[in-house]
Length: 320
Ligand code: UT7
Image 1 (cartoon, rainbow, N blue to C red):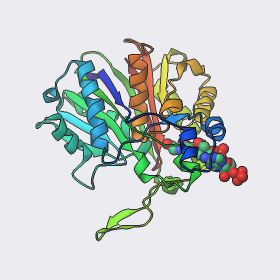
Image 2: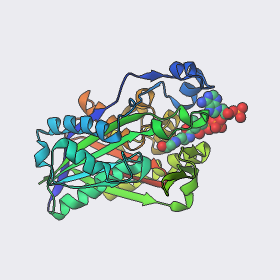
Image 3: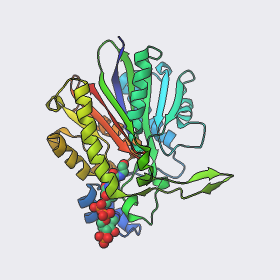
């Protein structure tokens, strides 16, 4: 049977870090104390004018390819998870493919908001395990700063821009041990950007809106439930987990998830302080940080988990 393994990771954050005090200086009615206490966020990054998701994705992808020892021409599947695509179409994946100089891969976007990366990774796993493809590039890339309402201090302080990427390859040994994806569109309106392009104009409101407390409760429940589901599908106890790499939205969500799972916070990779919430990019960015600083090592059990608009949620358990 063909399995698959992550063979390289890469990340990219545009520009200089923007602090909470920088947001206050820009006129947002908030404070470093409120943001840090309620969310754990201290910094985020914003793309420059004209810098698109595909540009951030390109930097992260080049780094992941280098880490995997692969050339762009080796890739036969490109999946980009994004809610902030460069254009309505073609897909950001096709734009990235062109920037990489690859002309042979299958390329498409996945839209599952902050769960997009784990959706993309799971789809890539199915392609590779079927034997149809051998070497996938899975990317989460976002310019969420473009869809924020800067008059809404309850949301604009939370998000940042960035991209993370992995190379996923066919392997004789796992690799990915279990996957779980879920969605419940009944909750579509607790986190949304309800605008659309219509007859050459924007119809509806093209800015992010959120019921923060409903999202918070939902996230804690499903991150805990999905972790249990992934471990039992692999026949492993939660104590066998070396690292949990969850979606980075709020440190309090991560602390509550740790308590639900009886998992020490030391086993959770936390980047929300430095990255803010980068939606589909948050999980691969956090993974890349912990791989490059030497915490995540070959042979360890690592769980990636996403949760976001839709509502969507899911995860991937792997032996790294
Ligand atoms: O990718 C998934 C996306 N999102 C999330 O995971 C977010 C999940 N939710 C959360 O993280 C939290 O609900 C928030 C951080 C968004 C909000 O925290 P909260 O503890 O639920 O605060 P709240 O919305 O109940 O607001 C409490 C107070 C309000 O003032 P009053 O009415 O009590 O006087 C807000 O107006 O805090 C005020 N407030 C702020 N004050 C300073 C809201 N935003 C800010 C702000 N600075 N940025």
